[in-house]
Image 1 (cartoon, rainbow, N blue to C red):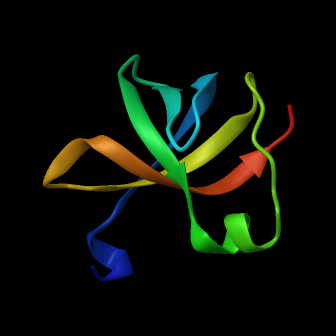
Image 2 (spheres, one colour; image 1 turned 90 degrees about the vertical axis):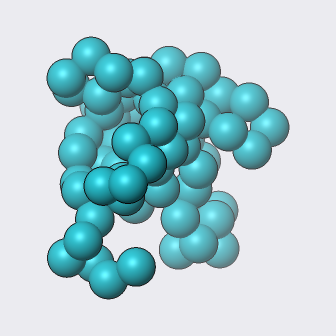
Length: 72
């Protein structure tokens, strides 16, 4: 999917499972996310409470790809 079709929104990590990460978005919705390949290759760890940027498809607003992590 082209980058301009994605929605980018910020959220906070609430739960971490084996491959899935639960994220509470700034609008209050809770979605399931996964690490983007760039973060996975560079061994970037995501912890509960981290602020993240998530790219979402406009067609499925229940899943997202984590593209950036902020420790605060």
